[in-house]
Length: 288
Ligand code: SF4
Image 1 (cartoon, rainbow, N blue to C red):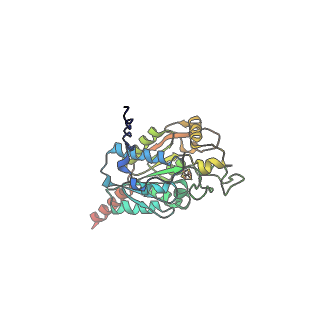
Image 2 (tube, helix red, strand yellow):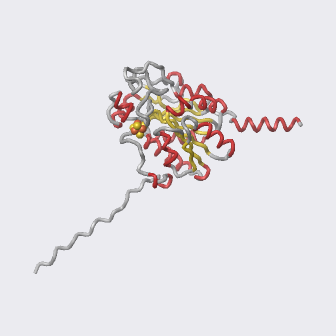
Image 3 (cartoon, protein in one colour):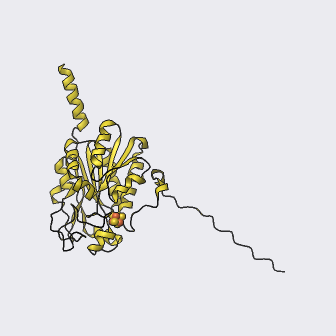
């Protein structure tokens, strides 16, 4: 008599693990970012950079402002602050002055860092506070519905610029270099390994270091400007991003439809705020 057909054993379920999982608060996942957004790539590059540096994780603190990029502070398994809008840099400055041995990283977006936070940015750079700022620039306020921001290119459309933007935007690498940043680089989320390398360099340099990450926001900026899906924006980067290390930051304007510069613009050393402070204290003590 034919026996009962044997039931096939169910394949063993092996959950996929992300190689950088140890740096993530996995209990907070899934994240809130849209499909095709570049923020996951930017965060991943940062985690790979940390892994490459091999620092004691207790020596690293991440500070974010408000917006889609600001969510990073909540996802990293590090000491982190998710601060008020535009105020990531004052929080980070306080942290660095109170605990000079900490590696302080600010991870935030273009609207947060350069609109309401713009004044803090130029003064932190001018003072050469020893920290790294990673700015994910997607040319609009993504989280709040796609409003015009300080990096929105001329003629680009946003919810608050339905007929096209007429305000000249900031060129972030020029702004950072002019304000005194000691390291300035720009990459896109397409250039993931180069971006990771730039993050490693910026994190390991002394002083105020800045990495701009050009990133797709298909839900808002991309949709309103008919740029297609996130992958289409990556194709656009492949066609229009021109790597030129050491280029004059003045030439790094971003104009829709035209080529734009990426690479390392500034890499120099100068005394940090804390070094100058300590030198002043020593000088005053010597006079007593
Ligand atoms: S709104 Fe834009 S920036 Fe925000 S998660 Fe979605 S795609 Fe990314």
